[in-house]
Image (cartoon, rainbow, N blue to C red; front, side, top):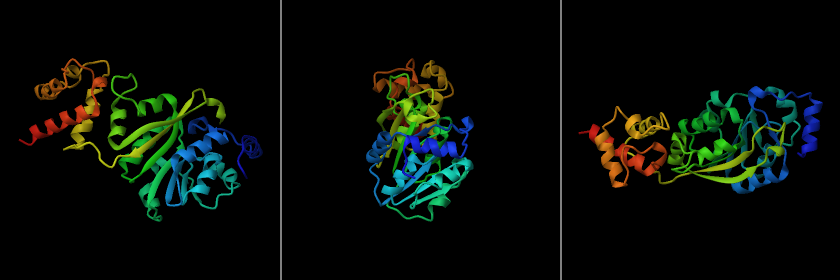
Amino acid sequence: MEYSPKKIKNELNKENFNFKKKFGQNFIVDKNIIHSIIKKSNIDKDTLVIEIGPGAGSLTAQLDKVSGHVIAYEIDKTLKPILEKQNLNNTTIIYEDFLKRNISEDLKNYNYSKTYVVANLPYYITTPIIIKLIEDKLNIDKIVVMVQKEVGNRFKAKPNTKEYNSLSIFLNYYFTVEKILDVSKNVFIPKPNVDSIVVSFTKKENKIKLKNEQIFFKLVRDSFKQKRKTLKNNLKGYNLEKIENILKKHNLDLTVRAEAISIEIFAEIANELYNKTKR
């Protein structure tokens, strides 16, 4: 089945498919958007692609053509008859919950020089999926995902913007995060209530130098604990004198809010706090 909005709608109707809100099912059917995602992902035959939530398979069908292999995770088994009608010669579909799956075990069967994640992510579990990809230490080279626009803006947010938060820093420690394109709500069936954005995460070969990642991430989380409060109020259990000494080097003080602190300054503070714990 060559995908098109009309054909996918017809297949879904034939199977009496019921879109399930609990799975965040909004299937992309616009050819131009799909081809843009494929082109900007720079996939080749040396690339293993992980897709989460293939839906009716419109993106999957194109990934199947250009990649070395596709591993797709679909939680909704009622999509199986529709996906089986796609001409997928190069794709393995696992009908399980991606968040509960041991992905490392699945990847052991494949040997490719690059591993990418390319997907239209279910909006309700976007952040848990991204965090799982990092915390499972899957050695992902690139992530290209379509997400809710508001969420995507947080992923790529810079200091001194309202979107900037602890997750922005967490992601930017591991990846260079960039917007690829905006996507209208009108290219999905059913049409969601919000617009989307396609964001790329490219693995950083030279991450910022940290002496202890746990101290760094705890510091960042605590600093954003109550976003409208100053560092002085959010970090009461810390050595504020040491923190202020670092801040002064950057013409800042403890009355600053976390949203004004760059990842480099947080790293400098965390490294100084680590030094003090080792003395």
